[in-house]
Image (cartoon, rainbow, N blue to C red; front, side):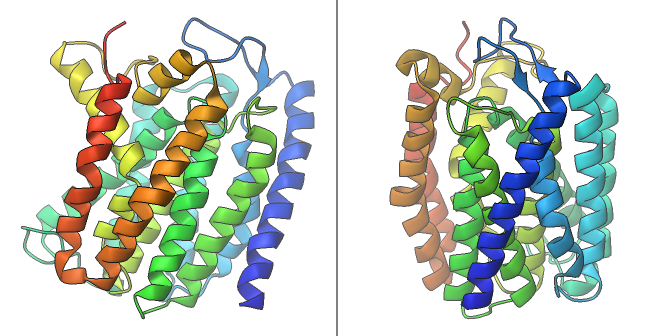
Amino acid sequence: MTESLLRFVGSAVAAAVLTGAFRWFAMRGRLLDYPNPRSAHDEPVPLGGGVGIVLACFPFLLLAPIGEGAAGIIAAGAGAVALVGFIDDRRGTPKWVRLLIHVIAVCALVVATGNLGPLELPGLPTGSLVASVVMAVALVWLINLYNFMDGIDGLAATETIFVSLGLALCLHLGGSPSPGLLAIYLVTAGSSLGFLLWNWPPARIFMGDVGSGFLGFLIGVLAMVAHRQGALSLWVPAILLAVFVSDTTVTLLRRMIRGEKWHEAHRLHGYQWLSRRLGSHGTVTVLVSGVNVLWLAPNAVAAVLLPQHAGLFALLAYIPVIAGVIAAGAGRSE
C-alpha cells in the first residue's frame, strides 16, 4: 500500500514539475495554441504540456514487471505515438502520417503481446485474425477519440485519473492483481493529476496531441494486456470509458450521415455544445466526473464481481450515457 501511494504521489509531483518546466519552454519557444473560430479559448495558451505526463510515466513504463518483455514493447509504441503527437503540436503533420504511426504501433503491440494470452472477444473465434484486427481498430480509435475529447480544460486529464484508478480498483477486486499493471495504472493517474494542476480551468497549458495520443494508447494497450493475462475483462475499461466512447462515436456517425468531412476539426461534440451553453469548462468537467463516479464506476465494479453478467452491465451503463450525449448535442450541425 505504501509503495503504491509513493508511486502515485511521486509521479504526480514529477509531472507537475515537468509540466511547469515545459510551460516555461513553450512560452519562450512560442509553442502556443492561438485562438481560431473552433477554439474554446480567447488568448494564446502554451501547447504540448502532455510532455510532462509522458516523461513522468516513461521510467515506470520501461521497468514495470508486466511479463515476457511486454513493458519495453509498450514503451516503444507509446513513445512513437507521443513523438508523432509532439511533432504535430510543434509544426503539424499530415493526418495520414499520424494515422500510419498509430496503426503500426497498435498492430505491433497486438502481435508482440500474443504470448501473454489469446484475444477473446464476444462473438469471435478466440485468438483469430479477425479478433486481432477488431482489437487493433478499437485501439486506434481510442487513441484518436482521446484527441477528440481533449477540447476543453481539464477534461482529458480528469478522465484519465478516473479510468486509471478505476482499472486499478477493478484489478484488485478481480482477485488477479498484476503488480506491473497496477503500478502503471497508478503512475498514469498520478502523472495526469500533476498535469491537471496546470490544466484545470482556466488552463495555463494544453495537453496537445503528445499527451492525448500517449494516454489513449497507454490505457487501451494496458486494458488489452490485462485481458490477455486473464486479470480483467475488456467490458470493464469499456464501461469506464463510456462517456468518451459515446460522445465521439455519436458525433462521428452523425457527421458521416450528413456527408461531412468527419476527419476535419470541428466543435460539435456533446461536451463542446454543453460548455458553450453553460459558459464553463469546469462545470462540464465536473459533470462528466460525476457521471463517471456515480454511474459508470458502480457498473464497472458490478461487471467485475458478476463477470457472467458483464455485458449486461455494459449495456446498462451505455444506454443513459448515449442518451445524455445526444441530448447535449453530440454531432448536431451548427
